[in-house]
Each structure stands twice: as structure tokens, then as C-alpha cells.
Length: 140
Image 1 (tube, rainbow, N blue to C red):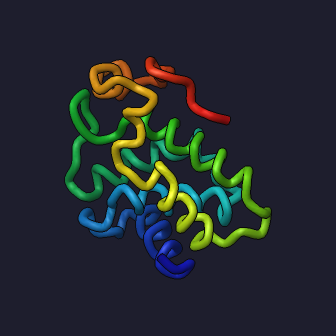
Image 2: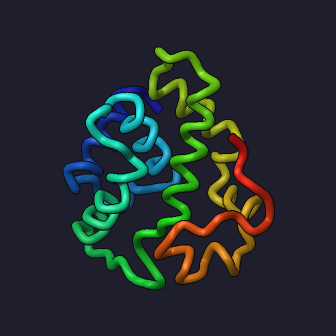
């Protein structure tokens, strides 16, 4: 994915114009990377929850106890994105960081199950609030 493609995804997400089918596992990470690297006015850990909820609703989704926004997944993904970026040069491009991220275990959409059991991660409590991993701690 190029820098321009990542910017298109991220700005479309922010403007709630990104087609729902484009909001993939990779798009979530690409957007997180772009926001961290290119939007110092946004603090993803604080701002992404409302942004994701708004986006979900804009494409006809519902943020509920069974679907839509998930706090633990969002915060874990942001934590891991920052951990990856911490090991890269400060002038890394979004496309380079994205390629490294997708080549890592984070590229697998099931990466979270290394740290959380399915029952814990899929619980209402984990969807509503941060729940620490129950299998092993997140690195970094």
C-alpha cells in the first residue's frame, strides 16, 4: 500500500466517506499509522473511540454490546502500532511502517488471540472497556 492509498483510507475514515467494504483489518492499522504519523492534533487513544463509533454509524452500523466499536481491540491495536513505530526511524513513511506491520504477526487478523482468550476478548466487558490480556501481556 502506498502513502497516497493510506492517506485516502485515513482521510475517508475521518470524513466518514470511506466505503464500508474498504474498512478492513489492514485499513484499521493503516489509519492508525497515518493518524499517529501525520495528525499530531489527534491523540488516537483518546479520539479514535468516538471516530470509530461515528464512522460505524455513518455506514449503517450499530455500536452495541455485540457489534461495532470494541474498546479493547482498539486500544490494543494502538498500543501495538506505537510499539512497532518505536523501533523505526522517526522519518518512517506510513507505507514503510504499514509494510512492516503487515509482515509482522499483526498482519494476521487473529493476532489478538495470542494475548486474549476468545471468551474474554469477545465479552461485553472487553467491548465496552479496556480489559488487560488474560493469556500473556502485550509487549512494549
